Image (cartoon, rainbow, N blue to C red):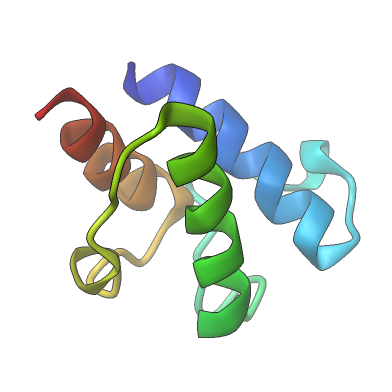
Length: 80
């Protein structure tokens, strides 16, 4: 599940930032490498919630530094 979420998170992040998805990876730091704003992240989370018909706790994602860490948190919430 984490791999699927990470792939979708990379795609959604690239779309929001207006960059090619292949320029991002699980190791991309969402704070320093791409400067993803909280409002942008909220939009991405909203898309996951719609797609998976679930609620994702945004406050837990505030602790993620990389796309991979964020994907792991989202995947755990989707499975839980």
